[in-house]
Image (cartoon, rainbow, N blue to C red; front, side):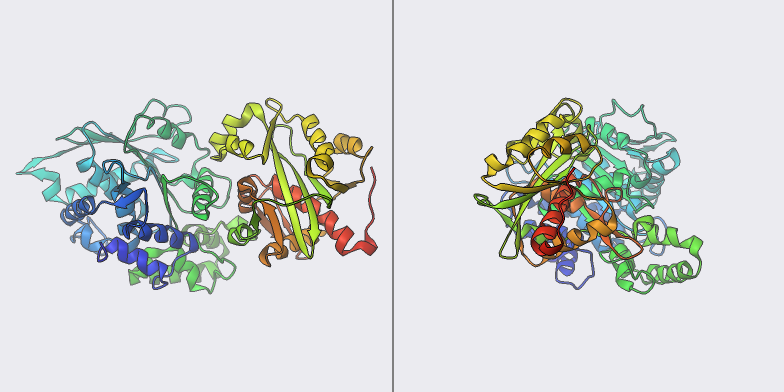
Length: 558
């Protein structure tokens, strides 16, 4: 195994010989752990891997720079890793069961992503049980059929696989491809918002997912896989100009898994997404991170450099270059992650003793059918201590679990989430929780900070007992607490009680800058729910004004 191309690639990525972005490094680290036999639940089946190798030696590159050579000879490092991980990592308790059910590939254009999945389809044509079904979905029928074209080209260029003693082993028709000996069939599907249910795919491809209007096609495929032992869904795309698309949801879910904030052993992802994007016009590392194939094929690298030169000079070419070849969301290039999740997790503690402390409460009352959050914070020897609670509509939990790919019921059991109301938040429960903070935590509430949106009525009730402060949701107001919170987390001067949902909110949070370079968290450009972060920033604002800028602090009473 040590000498196999997949192992060598993963090892070279981890040791820095091959430049790669952090999430690819994390996935490679996990793969190496499995290869070394250090994983208690999974191992790499070398017999299956050898079988894959043998088939790839019979498959022939149909076109391109290396046409006529075997796919075995021509495969690049990331392709080897994908073949080995997706098809050969199995359960120790049952080696017939593959570990991974979802493969997510985010990579720049001209990195053979559709061809790679087509190769996997051909491999599984030969290896899957009788009557297996394969499908592809995409934003339109033409894109969906691209993988069909790639499969046809591979088969017709590989006579040792395509036929047996002169007799074709595959039926290649306009609407489907069938492997005749076991009647395994692949069908490309035209995109529809309502006609994909009822399919029973062993394997499916969702191509150019960043251009899909919603997640229906993917979820319809997944719903049809419920009773299949070795199901596989391949989700592939480049970036698109907006972050509001199903592919970004899949990518962010994969990131949470690799960061350790989401438990899911069934997802394998290779996210060739540059970490620093500001200097795209001059930083070669951006191209290297987004284009693993270009590191092995000089002709592709040279072409990328030419495209970059044109994008620098011709603004109309810039968006396409940045999204398709650099894997950068061009319209969101002015945004950045709020904090490094590793820095945050180093600040996690099991329990904070709140008894006797003076605390500041931050509230983010969102739309009544969405999440709401309440944060408390205090200062101790330069540290910020915090606890944050989320509120969700009880009648929408199943819906939220499905679309956000979270388990809110687990967070409720852990005590960091409260379900209230039916389809909408019961603000009365939130109000009562705030009134209960002093007794619940054994603290004194100094002030309550709130965003006036949806909160005036609640603030008026709280004001009967506490000081209430309206916090303007403007960049010049939010910049100081945002900056302070970020610095405290980075410097390890922050503590929070173990709270996975809070970690996910931080991971979702994106910051942007106004014209005066004031940095603030923006909900519009964040990658999911950030209500808990917003509530915490409101609390930190009060703490900062009172404790740090005490001479200038003025309580605004409603």
